[in-house]
Image (cartoon, rainbow, N blue to C red; front, side):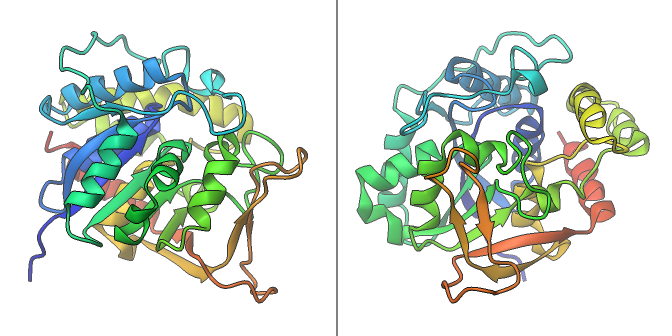
Length: 315
């Protein structure tokens, strides 16, 4: 029994791993219909994230995808970026040509609101791969869209793996904790792919060479991007490879059986500077706070990389 493809909006701040996630989504039209891709400030500032998003769409051979620029700073805090991980452009590694496809004139937040009002309720899934500024701004500006959202499947947060930008916080949530707080309190069905799961999806030589062996431009780019940020993560974590964070979101949408998690309460810390942006996940059920998120903890990494290699090989 085949289902019609799931309608999604990707909200992203590319980033090499965001780029791989976008390629995976665009390579999977039978599973996912990408209504548009929204850029947000995060890994690098907005002018680079919207440019990088268009570069990736062109690399995928999909220049007709609509790309929108969104918020250029968090709701309440100054922007923190991650050039130290992703390089100055956010897509450091191989040199890439400037994109020729246009950026849409409409603001990403307006696109999100308009799309959720137009499409039947509960048919659109939001897929944030970066800070949650665009999503929270849309919720604040148009509360009527909140009950219309089918699901939000996001990469962000951490519990057992704790922080990667501060000792307590994961980058996407830390950059805009107030936006995350709005989203996590919204009542929308949430699936959270935290560092706890993405740190089990590590690249290694064989996995990177499998992308290179595809013999295609997207395959070569994925190999070079993973080579680039792997050096940073291996030095930091002392691990065999680097986590591919954001593709986990798209893989979950295509095949949720790759993952396992628990339906639990997750709260966002917005008061304390020491733990700002921490995702306080009640994994052991020690509070009576109601569950608001499916918090993913496990992944079948071999099947995940097989899916990724197979789909990127189609582009």
